Structure formats: structure tokens, C-alpha cells
Length: 467
Length: 95
Ligand SMILES: Cc1ncc(COP(=O)(O)O)c(C=O)c1O
Image (cartoon, each protein chain N blue to C red):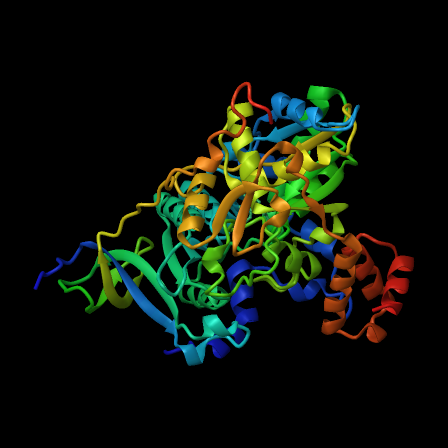
């Protein structure tokens, strides 16, 4: 029996491959031309929070420490207006088995794959999630294949991506290393079809439910340490699962903290470009994923994405590469801890945000990730130089993505800037309108779209007039 | 010619899509390059570098491709010294 393995033929078999590889029939959740029953899809996983805590604690996931960063807070207060400089806390997610919060995301999928009798798991990912799937699969006796975009056409791999691939192999996974391009998804489908393994997509309800425990823990720990709720929880944002899961967990715990997204601003670089691939020093947590996924989540490798970040996002901060490297260095020198790039992105946002808030207010950076050779700001800067990028100290505002990285001269220059939330929401509506013309939207579709951008029907009706 | 013994840990390369077969949404610079994959595995039979070979991967799959690297290993590091970082946040310095 020979299957047609051309790009077009495999993509055309997408829905049947998906159904077989996850056991979820997404069609039953459809409620309109645009709308689907998101909460029902999430509930149908059938897991309570207690169930998930039990699953996670059996495979070395969750219950990570929370630390207050006293010295960094003090440094921020010195450069802030009188009375300003909120307390900064960080949740040390690097303590999860695979070294990042992604272990939460993989844990429930691995449990389900094992329960349903799949022999292995497959994920297509830039890295941390691959390590998480590999680590969880190893503990559950499942085989694992990770498909990763690694090299440009000259065969050069970003040091951080190379390290993430190594970690997957360390846990016994087969790592397929790809050149640049969106066809990762094509090979993912092809491999799911060939092996009959479980599709451990980042964007299933299982993945997002797994992150909800992170939000619960943040609420409980901050209450225990300070006697109150955090004012803001800042989340490194790319595909949106980190933010969605954490925010859902906070809400379930009755915590009304503002949920703030933070990404490295990589505007000007094209994510599927072979030329640009090695001209960026961040492999996730950047606007190249953060903006497209916020403004249209259903572009993922599942029919309906369980990560719907605009539903939960109150604010969105952008930081430059140089600002993150500066704050990463401060974390080591002032707080005596070395951690990897993704968590340090939201930490940089937290520094900027803390200056706007009062001293009695609390900001939580909800993750750290592991660090090591390749996955380190020194590796990234050294590599960037080799790729012809200018690296210097100065005002980060002068940096040009793909050409220069400017590391601030002092903490006062770590400012970040705001992403316009209404612009994002309008962009979502434009994308939704491409799926189905708004004149054909039912009341259910309108309610869905309004909820998907965290607004009410009145706002939506007005917004549609200006589209 | 050096024969590479079956069972050796090697890396192969395989063209998945030629430049003509690539996805329609791929940007122009990327479209000029074929879509390649590399994977490591145990060599199935004695071969030489650049031969078309078969490997058995860590998940137990058999995959065919061109033999490119014998005993592939990692050598990513912390990179060269970046002097711009050294004086950030030192005890007693102004931040
Ligand atoms: C350690 C870490 N933090 C944050 C993120 C961003 O999460 P998300 O893609 O769910 O927005 C990633 C994802 O790649 C990650 O690996």
C-alpha cells in the first residue's frame, strides 16, 4: 500500500490524521459559522484540578518554588518616582523535570496517550516543549519523536535550538532536525500517519489544562507569602498557551490579578525566512509568534486551538533583545540565580511595569526556564556577532532587529513599550472576517468573537462598523 | 576508502520537498532552498560517507538518506567572551 506523500495530499488528509492521533472530534463543538463551544471542549477532557495535580506530581511536575526578588526590587525603586517600584516575585518553573513550564503542558497528554494505549507521542516544536514531551514520555514508557526546525540552508543552527534538540535526545527521543519552513507541520502529519502515535500538540485542551495548575499555585503561594493577591501576573507570550492556562488557573482560584503578556519585539524579521532565521537571538517568547497567535489562534496544528490568549490578556508589553540580556545579567549578579531566556523576557517586562506600580503592589513573573551551554545570553550574543549583528552598550531604543543588539547602559533604560491592545483586537476581527463575512455572523458567532477578545457585544458591534 | 561499520551511530540527510514542491506560503528566499531533514540513527549495513543508506532511529524506525556524519555530537558552548556583559550589576557599582 503506498500513500501519496506530496505536500498537498498530506495536508488534505489533515482532519482524518488529527482525529486518529488524538481521539478528539472537534466537529461536535461547532456552534456557528465562526463559533465553537470553548468551555465545553475544555471540560470534556474530564479532569478536575485535583486529577491534574495528581498526574503531574507522579511525573515530577509542578509545586515549584516562588521567590521574592528583593535586590532587583530595591534596584528598581532607586530609579523610580517616589513611592513607585512594586515587589517582584518569580516562580521557579525551571524546577520542573524538563526544566520549564512546558512539562505541565506535556504531562496530561502523556497520561492520556498512555491510558488510551498509544505506543508513542509526537510533537513538532521549537524545543522546550519537545524536551517536556520527551521527559514525560520517558517516564511513562512511551516512545517519542520530536520534529524541530534547526538549521538554515547553510546547515547552521542557532545555539539555543541545538541545545534544545540535545535535551530531547538526552531523554531518549528521536529528533528530526529540519531546515527552515512551515512544512514542519507536513512532516508531523506524515509521521503521525506512519507511526499511529499520539499527537502531543501544544494546542490541545490537555496541554492547556496542564498549565492551569501554574495559575492555581501562583495564587496560593502569593497569598501565603504576602496575605494578599498579586496585582499583576506577567507571562512570556508566544503561541498563547502559557498565558491562557495560567490565566484560567488564576480565575479558578478566584484571583483577579491583571494578566500581562510580554514578548521580545522582533518586528521586521520574517519567521519563515531562511535569511532571517539566524539573525534573531530568541527562539520563542517573541512577537513573531505572539502577535499572529493572539490575533488568530486557529492557525495551529489542531482544528480549534485551546490556547486563546486574547480572551485573557489585559495588557501586552514588548521588550527588546538587549533589554532582556541586561536584566538576565542582573538576575545573576543581584539575585544569584542563572536562568534561561524565556522567563527573563517577562522578568524584563516586570522591571518596566514595577516602575509604574506602587511599592505595596505585587508583580509575579510566572516562570523561569533552565539555562546552560547554548541556552544562555552569552552564547546568543557571541553567535549574533558571528552572524554579523552589531552588539554594543547604549540606548536600546536605537537597536534595529536583524542588524544590532543594544544592551542598556543602566537600569533606567529598561523601559519596554506597550502593544496597542485595541489594535490587536481589530486585527483579530479582520482575521475572523476572512474566515466568514461578519454580515453572516449569528448572535452566537458575535458572542464568541466578543469573548475571544475579552470585550462585550456592544464593543464588538461598534468595532465591526469600523472594520 | 573507509568503511563505516553497520551499527555505527551516524547522521543522515534527506530531501523531503524539492524547491518546486515547497508549501505555497513559503517566502521567496526560503523557496529557493529544498526542505531538508536530518536524523541520527544506527547504520543498518556497512557503508561509506555520502552513500545512500538506511538507519534505525532511537524510536526504532528505518529511514533512508545520505550518510553525512559519523558519530554526530554536540559542541555548542557558552560562546566567546562578551565583554559588554562583564560590568553589569557588580557589587558596589551603580545600576
Ligand atoms: C520556557 C517557555 N516559556 C514561554 C513560552 C511561551 O509560551 P506560549 O507559546 O504558550 O505562549 C515558551 C514557548 O515556546 C517556552 O518554552
